[in-house]
Image 1 (cartoon, rainbow, N blue to C red):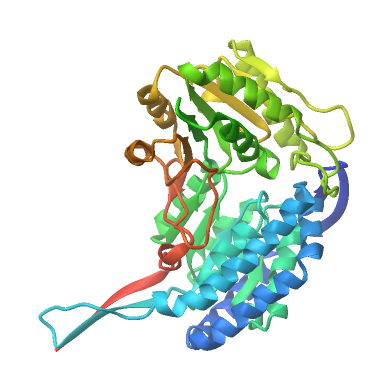
Image 2: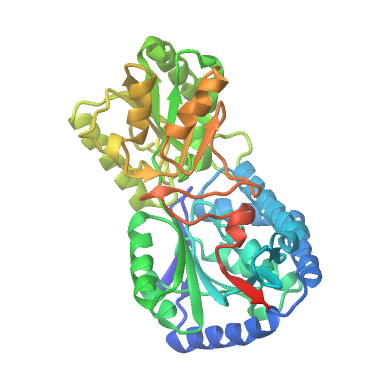
Length: 454
Protein backbone atom coordinates (compact mmCIF):
# COMPACT_ATOMS: atom_id res chain seq x y z
CA UNK A 1 0.00 0.00 0.00
CA UNK A 2 1.25 3.48 -0.86
CA UNK A 3 2.27 6.05 1.77
CA UNK A 4 1.30 9.59 0.77
CA UNK A 5 2.77 12.98 1.60
CA UNK A 6 0.05 15.64 1.24
CA UNK A 7 0.47 19.36 1.83
CA UNK A 8 -2.29 20.38 4.30
CA UNK A 9 -2.01 24.03 3.25
CA UNK A 10 -3.21 23.11 -0.24
CA UNK A 11 -4.66 19.60 0.08
CA UNK A 12 -2.48 18.52 -2.84
CA UNK A 13 -0.40 15.35 -3.12
CA UNK A 14 3.36 15.94 -2.91
CA UNK A 15 4.76 12.44 -3.32
CA UNK A 16 3.87 8.76 -2.95
CA UNK A 17 6.08 6.08 -1.40
CA UNK A 18 5.72 2.29 -1.46
CA UNK A 19 5.67 0.47 1.86
CA UNK A 20 8.60 -1.83 2.59
CA UNK A 21 7.87 -5.50 2.00
CA UNK A 22 8.47 -8.23 4.59
CA UNK A 23 11.78 -9.30 3.13
CA UNK A 24 13.19 -5.79 3.25
CA UNK A 25 11.97 -5.29 6.82
CA UNK A 26 13.55 -8.56 7.99
CA UNK A 27 16.82 -7.62 6.29
CA UNK A 28 16.92 -4.25 8.07
CA UNK A 29 16.16 -5.84 11.44
CA UNK A 30 18.87 -8.47 10.94
CA UNK A 31 21.50 -5.90 9.99
CA UNK A 32 20.42 -3.59 12.82
CA UNK A 33 20.89 -6.42 15.31
CA UNK A 34 24.37 -7.16 13.95
CA UNK A 35 25.16 -3.45 14.26
CA UNK A 36 23.95 -3.41 17.86
CA UNK A 37 26.48 -6.08 18.81
CA UNK A 38 29.21 -3.64 17.74
CA UNK A 39 27.57 -0.35 18.72
CA UNK A 40 27.11 -1.34 22.37
CA UNK A 41 30.91 -1.64 22.64
CA UNK A 42 31.56 1.86 21.28
CA UNK A 43 32.96 4.24 23.90
CA UNK A 44 30.96 7.14 25.27
CA UNK A 45 33.54 9.54 23.88
CA UNK A 46 33.01 8.24 20.34
CA UNK A 47 29.21 8.25 20.68
CA UNK A 48 29.43 11.79 22.09
CA UNK A 49 31.41 12.96 19.07
CA UNK A 50 28.83 11.51 16.66
CA UNK A 51 25.86 12.91 18.59
CA UNK A 52 27.43 16.37 18.61
CA UNK A 53 27.88 15.95 14.85
CA UNK A 54 24.13 15.33 14.61
CA UNK A 55 23.43 18.46 16.67
CA UNK A 56 25.62 20.50 14.35
CA UNK A 57 24.02 18.97 11.25
CA UNK A 58 20.54 19.87 12.51
CA UNK A 59 21.52 23.48 13.18
CA UNK A 60 23.10 23.79 9.74
CA UNK A 61 20.03 22.39 7.97
CA UNK A 62 17.30 23.90 10.14
CA UNK A 63 15.76 26.00 7.37
CA UNK A 64 15.65 23.09 4.92
CA UNK A 65 14.33 20.60 7.48
CA UNK A 66 11.88 23.13 8.89
CA UNK A 67 10.38 23.63 5.45
CA UNK A 68 9.88 19.88 5.08
CA UNK A 69 8.00 19.78 8.41
CA UNK A 70 5.77 22.70 7.42
CA UNK A 71 5.09 21.25 3.97
CA UNK A 72 4.08 17.84 5.33
CA UNK A 73 2.07 18.71 8.46
CA UNK A 74 1.35 22.43 8.27
CA UNK A 75 2.80 24.07 11.38
CA UNK A 76 4.05 27.67 10.98
CA UNK A 77 7.59 27.72 9.60
CA UNK A 78 8.96 29.61 12.60
CA UNK A 79 7.73 26.79 14.85
CA UNK A 80 9.20 24.16 12.53
CA UNK A 81 12.63 25.77 12.67
CA UNK A 82 12.35 26.02 16.47
CA UNK A 83 11.57 22.29 16.53
CA UNK A 84 14.79 21.49 14.67
CA UNK A 85 16.74 23.70 17.07
CA UNK A 86 15.24 21.82 20.00
CA UNK A 87 16.29 18.52 18.44
CA UNK A 88 19.83 19.84 18.29
CA UNK A 89 19.59 20.75 21.98
CA UNK A 90 18.50 17.25 23.03
CA UNK A 91 21.39 15.76 21.05
CA UNK A 92 23.81 18.08 22.86
CA UNK A 93 22.23 17.33 26.24
CA UNK A 94 22.68 13.56 25.99
CA UNK A 95 26.06 13.84 24.29
CA UNK A 96 27.30 15.80 27.30
CA UNK A 97 25.46 13.92 30.07
CA UNK A 98 24.92 10.28 29.06
CA UNK A 99 28.23 8.95 30.40
CA UNK A 100 27.72 10.59 33.80
CA UNK A 101 24.09 9.44 34.06
CA UNK A 102 24.95 5.85 33.15
CA UNK A 103 28.11 5.43 35.17
CA UNK A 104 28.13 2.54 37.65
CA UNK A 105 26.31 3.34 40.87
CA UNK A 106 28.20 2.10 43.94
CA UNK A 107 25.95 0.55 46.61
CA UNK A 108 27.17 -0.35 50.11
CA UNK A 109 26.05 -3.89 51.04
CA UNK A 110 27.47 -6.95 52.79
CA UNK A 111 29.56 -7.68 49.68
CA UNK A 112 33.19 -6.75 49.15
CA UNK A 113 31.92 -4.66 46.29
CA UNK A 114 28.46 -4.09 44.85
CA UNK A 115 27.18 -1.73 42.22
CA UNK A 116 24.50 -1.14 39.62
CA UNK A 117 25.41 -0.93 35.96
CA UNK A 118 23.29 0.06 32.97
CA UNK A 119 23.44 -2.10 29.84
CA UNK A 120 21.63 -1.38 26.53
CA UNK A 121 18.75 -3.65 25.51
CA UNK A 122 19.24 -3.83 21.74
CA UNK A 123 16.86 -2.83 18.95
CA UNK A 124 14.11 -0.42 20.05
CA UNK A 125 11.20 0.27 17.70
CA UNK A 126 9.87 3.84 17.84
CA UNK A 127 6.30 4.35 16.59
CA UNK A 128 6.04 8.10 16.21
CA UNK A 129 3.34 10.71 15.39
CA UNK A 130 3.17 13.46 12.81
CA UNK A 131 2.56 16.49 15.07
CA UNK A 132 6.20 17.02 16.11
CA UNK A 133 7.74 14.84 13.42
CA UNK A 134 11.38 15.53 14.34
CA UNK A 135 11.23 16.33 18.07
CA UNK A 136 9.24 13.23 19.06
CA UNK A 137 11.84 11.06 17.33
CA UNK A 138 14.95 12.81 18.62
CA UNK A 139 13.82 12.87 22.24
CA UNK A 140 13.79 9.07 21.97
CA UNK A 141 16.74 8.56 19.64
CA UNK A 142 19.35 10.75 21.35
CA UNK A 143 19.20 8.97 24.74
CA UNK A 144 18.59 5.50 23.27
CA UNK A 145 21.61 5.66 20.98
CA UNK A 146 23.86 7.21 23.61
CA UNK A 147 22.91 4.32 25.93
CA UNK A 148 24.13 1.85 23.29
CA UNK A 149 20.82 0.81 21.75
CA UNK A 150 19.97 0.97 18.06
CA UNK A 151 16.71 2.41 16.75
CA UNK A 152 14.09 1.58 14.15
CA UNK A 153 11.57 4.27 13.22
CA UNK A 154 8.00 3.63 12.11
CA UNK A 155 6.81 7.16 11.50
CA UNK A 156 3.29 8.44 10.86
CA UNK A 157 2.22 7.73 7.29
CA UNK A 158 1.62 11.40 6.42
CA UNK A 159 5.23 12.49 7.13
CA UNK A 160 7.40 10.12 5.07
CA UNK A 161 9.74 12.90 3.94
CA UNK A 162 10.47 13.75 7.57
CA UNK A 163 11.21 10.11 8.40
CA UNK A 164 13.63 9.82 5.48
CA UNK A 165 15.44 13.01 6.48
CA UNK A 166 15.73 11.89 10.12
CA UNK A 167 17.56 8.72 9.09
CA UNK A 168 19.81 10.89 6.94
CA UNK A 169 20.69 13.12 9.93
CA UNK A 170 22.35 10.19 11.70
CA UNK A 171 23.97 8.71 8.60
CA UNK A 172 25.40 12.05 7.44
CA UNK A 173 26.68 12.71 10.97
CA UNK A 174 28.87 9.62 10.86
CA UNK A 175 26.79 7.03 12.70
CA UNK A 176 27.07 3.46 11.35
CA UNK A 177 24.31 2.90 8.80
CA UNK A 178 22.19 0.48 10.84
CA UNK A 179 22.39 2.26 14.20
CA UNK A 180 19.25 4.15 13.18
CA UNK A 181 17.00 3.05 10.32
CA UNK A 182 13.70 4.26 8.97
CA UNK A 183 10.96 1.73 8.18
CA UNK A 184 8.45 2.98 5.61
CA UNK A 185 5.63 0.69 6.75
CA UNK A 186 1.89 0.80 7.44
CA UNK A 187 0.43 0.55 10.93
CA UNK A 188 -0.75 -2.96 10.09
CA UNK A 189 2.90 -4.06 9.71
CA UNK A 190 4.00 -2.94 13.20
CA UNK A 191 2.84 -6.11 14.96
CA UNK A 192 5.06 -8.26 12.72
CA UNK A 193 8.09 -6.08 13.55
CA UNK A 194 7.40 -6.37 17.27
CA UNK A 195 7.16 -10.15 16.98
CA UNK A 196 10.71 -10.36 15.65
CA UNK A 197 12.83 -11.78 18.49
CA UNK A 198 15.63 -9.34 17.69
CA UNK A 199 13.42 -6.33 18.53
CA UNK A 200 13.67 -5.92 22.29
CA UNK A 201 11.43 -2.97 23.14
CA UNK A 202 9.12 -0.29 21.77
CA UNK A 203 8.24 3.32 22.43
CA UNK A 204 5.11 4.96 21.06
CA UNK A 205 3.84 8.52 21.03
CA UNK A 206 0.32 8.82 19.71
CA UNK A 207 -3.32 8.06 20.47
CA UNK A 208 -4.43 5.90 23.36
CA UNK A 209 -5.84 3.41 20.82
CA UNK A 210 -2.50 3.04 19.05
CA UNK A 211 -0.77 2.79 22.42
CA UNK A 212 -3.10 0.02 23.57
CA UNK A 213 -2.39 -2.03 20.43
CA UNK A 214 1.39 -1.79 20.84
CA UNK A 215 1.11 -2.44 24.58
CA UNK A 216 -0.99 -5.57 23.93
CA UNK A 217 1.51 -6.92 21.41
CA UNK A 218 4.50 -6.24 23.64
CA UNK A 219 2.68 -7.49 26.72
CA UNK A 220 2.15 -10.91 25.12
CA UNK A 221 5.82 -11.00 24.17
CA UNK A 222 7.09 -9.63 27.53
CA UNK A 223 8.82 -6.67 25.86
CA UNK A 224 9.41 -3.29 27.47
CA UNK A 225 7.29 -0.34 26.33
CA UNK A 226 7.09 3.38 26.98
CA UNK A 227 3.86 5.13 25.96
CA UNK A 228 3.21 8.87 25.64
CA UNK A 229 -0.41 9.18 24.60
CA UNK A 230 -3.12 11.79 24.44
CA UNK A 231 -3.79 14.67 26.76
CA UNK A 232 -6.58 17.05 27.73
CA UNK A 233 -4.44 19.39 29.75
CA UNK A 234 -6.14 21.73 32.23
CA UNK A 235 -5.18 25.41 32.39
CA UNK A 236 -6.42 26.46 35.84
CA UNK A 237 -6.82 30.18 36.58
CA UNK A 238 -7.39 31.26 40.20
CA UNK A 239 -8.72 34.63 41.35
CA UNK A 240 -5.30 36.00 42.39
CA UNK A 241 -3.68 35.26 39.00
CA UNK A 242 -2.28 37.88 36.63
CA UNK A 243 -5.21 37.68 34.23
CA UNK A 244 -3.68 39.73 31.41
CA UNK A 245 -0.60 37.52 31.32
CA UNK A 246 -2.66 34.35 31.77
CA UNK A 247 -4.95 35.22 28.84
CA UNK A 248 -2.03 35.92 26.50
CA UNK A 249 -0.25 32.69 27.40
CA UNK A 250 -3.55 30.80 27.22
CA UNK A 251 -3.85 31.56 23.51
CA UNK A 252 -0.28 30.47 22.81
CA UNK A 253 -0.71 27.36 24.97
CA UNK A 254 -3.84 26.38 23.05
CA UNK A 255 -2.70 27.20 19.51
CA UNK A 256 0.91 25.95 19.60
CA UNK A 257 1.48 23.56 16.68
CA UNK A 258 -1.89 24.62 15.23
CA UNK A 259 -3.52 23.30 18.41
CA UNK A 260 -2.26 19.79 17.65
CA UNK A 261 -0.10 19.06 20.67
CA UNK A 262 -0.65 16.47 23.39
CA UNK A 263 0.53 19.00 25.99
CA UNK A 264 -1.37 21.97 24.56
CA UNK A 265 -3.73 23.49 27.11
CA UNK A 266 -7.22 22.35 26.17
CA UNK A 267 -9.55 22.83 29.17
CA UNK A 268 -9.46 26.36 30.59
CA UNK A 269 -10.86 26.10 34.11
CA UNK A 270 -11.49 29.51 35.65
CA UNK A 271 -12.87 30.31 39.11
CA UNK A 272 -16.20 32.11 39.19
CA UNK A 273 -15.03 35.45 40.66
CA UNK A 274 -12.82 36.29 37.70
CA UNK A 275 -14.44 34.15 35.01
CA UNK A 276 -16.16 36.96 33.07
CA UNK A 277 -13.03 39.12 33.07
CA UNK A 278 -10.83 36.27 31.90
CA UNK A 279 -13.31 35.27 29.20
CA UNK A 280 -13.27 38.80 27.77
CA UNK A 281 -9.46 38.95 27.78
CA UNK A 282 -9.18 35.45 26.30
CA UNK A 283 -11.57 36.19 23.43
CA UNK A 284 -9.82 39.50 22.64
CA UNK A 285 -6.43 37.76 22.49
CA UNK A 286 -7.81 35.00 20.27
CA UNK A 287 -9.16 37.61 17.84
CA UNK A 288 -5.58 38.81 17.21
CA UNK A 289 -4.48 35.48 15.74
CA UNK A 290 -3.40 35.55 12.10
CA UNK A 291 -4.33 32.45 10.09
CA UNK A 292 -2.68 31.71 6.76
CA UNK A 293 0.02 30.03 4.71
CA UNK A 294 2.34 28.33 7.24
CA UNK A 295 5.37 29.26 5.13
CA UNK A 296 4.65 32.90 5.98
CA UNK A 297 6.66 34.04 9.02
CA UNK A 298 3.95 36.55 9.99
CA UNK A 299 1.16 34.05 10.63
CA UNK A 300 0.28 32.42 13.94
CA UNK A 301 -1.91 29.51 12.84
CA UNK A 302 -1.68 27.14 9.89
CA UNK A 303 -3.90 24.26 8.72
CA UNK A 304 -4.94 21.03 10.42
CA UNK A 305 -2.56 18.25 9.37
CA UNK A 306 -5.12 16.05 7.59
CA UNK A 307 -8.62 16.53 6.23
CA UNK A 308 -10.06 13.59 8.20
CA UNK A 309 -8.80 15.21 11.42
CA UNK A 310 -10.51 18.45 10.44
CA UNK A 311 -13.84 16.61 10.03
CA UNK A 312 -13.36 14.90 13.40
CA UNK A 313 -12.72 18.27 15.04
CA UNK A 314 -15.85 19.77 13.47
CA UNK A 315 -17.92 16.81 14.67
CA UNK A 316 -16.74 17.24 18.26
CA UNK A 317 -17.69 20.92 18.23
CA UNK A 318 -21.07 20.33 16.60
CA UNK A 319 -22.00 17.64 19.14
CA UNK A 320 -20.97 19.90 22.02
CA UNK A 321 -23.06 22.78 20.67
CA UNK A 322 -26.04 20.47 20.20
CA UNK A 323 -25.67 19.54 23.89
CA UNK A 324 -25.75 23.22 24.96
CA UNK A 325 -22.24 24.64 24.49
CA UNK A 326 -21.82 28.22 23.27
CA UNK A 327 -19.36 29.30 20.58
CA UNK A 328 -17.72 32.58 21.64
CA UNK A 329 -15.47 32.84 18.58
CA UNK A 330 -14.77 30.67 15.53
CA UNK A 331 -16.27 27.20 15.37
CA UNK A 332 -15.97 26.16 11.75
CA UNK A 333 -13.72 25.32 8.81
CA UNK A 334 -12.32 28.27 6.89
CA UNK A 335 -13.61 28.40 3.32
CA UNK A 336 -10.32 28.32 1.44
CA UNK A 337 -7.88 25.87 -0.13
CA UNK A 338 -6.34 23.52 2.43
CA UNK A 339 -7.45 22.22 5.82
CA UNK A 340 -7.83 25.44 7.82
CA UNK A 341 -10.01 25.83 10.92
CA UNK A 342 -10.95 29.02 12.75
CA UNK A 343 -9.39 29.83 16.15
CA UNK A 344 -12.22 28.82 18.46
CA UNK A 345 -13.38 29.25 22.07
CA UNK A 346 -16.48 27.50 23.40
CA UNK A 347 -18.13 27.96 26.80
CA UNK A 348 -21.07 26.54 28.81
CA UNK A 349 -19.42 23.15 28.64
CA UNK A 350 -20.58 20.21 30.77
CA UNK A 351 -19.63 16.56 31.29
CA UNK A 352 -21.95 15.25 28.58
CA UNK A 353 -20.02 16.98 25.80
CA UNK A 354 -17.04 15.84 23.71
CA UNK A 355 -15.44 19.21 24.50
CA UNK A 356 -15.32 18.21 28.18
CA UNK A 357 -14.32 14.54 28.09
CA UNK A 358 -12.45 14.00 24.80
CA UNK A 359 -9.11 15.27 23.56
CA UNK A 360 -9.71 18.15 21.15
CA UNK A 361 -6.82 18.13 18.66
CA UNK A 362 -6.99 21.49 16.94
CA UNK A 363 -7.31 25.25 17.63
CA UNK A 364 -10.31 24.92 19.95
CA UNK A 365 -10.32 26.06 23.59
CA UNK A 366 -12.91 24.92 26.12
CA UNK A 367 -13.88 27.38 28.89
CA UNK A 368 -15.20 25.84 32.12
CA UNK A 369 -16.37 27.77 35.18
CA UNK A 370 -15.50 26.53 38.70
CA UNK A 371 -17.01 27.78 41.97
CA UNK A 372 -13.65 27.97 43.73
CA UNK A 373 -10.12 26.56 43.67
CA UNK A 374 -11.20 23.23 45.17
CA UNK A 375 -13.74 22.64 42.44
CA UNK A 376 -11.21 23.83 39.86
CA UNK A 377 -8.81 21.06 40.93
CA UNK A 378 -11.65 18.52 40.92
CA UNK A 379 -12.51 19.47 37.34
CA UNK A 380 -8.85 19.38 36.33
CA UNK A 381 -8.63 15.80 37.61
CA UNK A 382 -11.98 14.79 36.10
CA UNK A 383 -10.37 13.40 32.95
CA UNK A 384 -9.16 10.08 31.57
CA UNK A 385 -5.90 11.83 30.76
CA UNK A 386 -3.05 13.06 32.92
CA UNK A 387 -0.23 14.46 30.83
CA UNK A 388 0.41 18.07 31.81
CA UNK A 389 -1.29 20.94 33.66
CA UNK A 390 -0.86 24.69 33.99
CA UNK A 391 -1.80 26.53 37.19
CA UNK A 392 -2.08 30.31 37.51
CA UNK A 393 -1.88 32.05 40.89
CA UNK A 394 0.35 34.60 42.63
CA UNK A 395 0.28 32.61 45.86
CA UNK A 396 3.31 30.39 45.29
CA UNK A 397 3.02 28.50 48.58
CA UNK A 398 -0.54 27.56 47.78
CA UNK A 399 0.41 26.73 44.20
CA UNK A 400 2.82 24.02 45.37
CA UNK A 401 0.13 22.46 47.54
CA UNK A 402 -2.36 22.48 44.67
CA UNK A 403 0.23 21.15 42.22
CA UNK A 404 0.59 18.06 44.40
CA UNK A 405 -3.17 17.47 44.08
CA UNK A 406 -3.25 17.62 40.28
CA UNK A 407 -3.13 14.21 38.58
CA UNK A 408 -0.62 14.71 35.78
CA UNK A 409 2.94 14.02 34.74
CA UNK A 410 3.88 17.68 35.08
CA UNK A 411 2.51 20.92 36.48
CA UNK A 412 3.71 24.32 35.26
CA UNK A 413 2.89 27.22 37.57
CA UNK A 414 2.36 30.59 35.85
CA UNK A 415 3.64 29.23 32.53
CA UNK A 416 2.59 26.97 29.66
CA UNK A 417 3.50 23.29 29.69
CA UNK A 418 6.54 22.41 27.58
CA UNK A 419 9.10 19.64 27.27
CA UNK A 420 12.71 20.19 28.29
CA UNK A 421 15.62 17.71 27.95
CA UNK A 422 16.50 18.34 31.61
CA UNK A 423 13.05 17.38 32.96
CA UNK A 424 11.26 14.01 32.77
CA UNK A 425 8.32 13.96 30.38
CA UNK A 426 5.32 11.63 30.39
CA UNK A 427 1.89 11.07 31.87
CA UNK A 428 -0.42 8.93 33.94
CA UNK A 429 -3.88 7.39 33.40
CA UNK A 430 -4.67 7.16 29.66
CA UNK A 431 -1.83 9.56 28.87
CA UNK A 432 0.53 6.60 29.14
CA UNK A 433 3.41 5.39 31.27
CA UNK A 434 7.17 5.60 31.45
CA UNK A 435 9.24 8.74 31.02
CA UNK A 436 11.24 10.39 28.30
CA UNK A 437 14.02 12.98 28.69
CA UNK A 438 16.28 13.78 31.68
CA UNK A 439 18.15 11.00 33.46
CA UNK A 440 14.88 9.07 33.84
CA UNK A 441 14.33 8.80 30.08
CA UNK A 442 17.72 7.36 29.18
CA UNK A 443 17.22 4.59 31.76
CA UNK A 444 13.95 3.35 30.27
CA UNK A 445 15.71 1.22 27.66
CA UNK A 446 18.60 -0.22 29.65
CA UNK A 447 19.02 -3.30 31.81
CA UNK A 448 19.49 -1.96 35.35
CA UNK A 449 21.81 -4.71 36.55
CA UNK A 450 22.98 -5.36 40.13
CA UNK A 451 26.52 -6.77 40.50
CA UNK A 452 27.52 -8.31 43.88
CA UNK A 453 31.12 -9.41 44.54
CA UNK A 454 32.66 -11.24 47.51
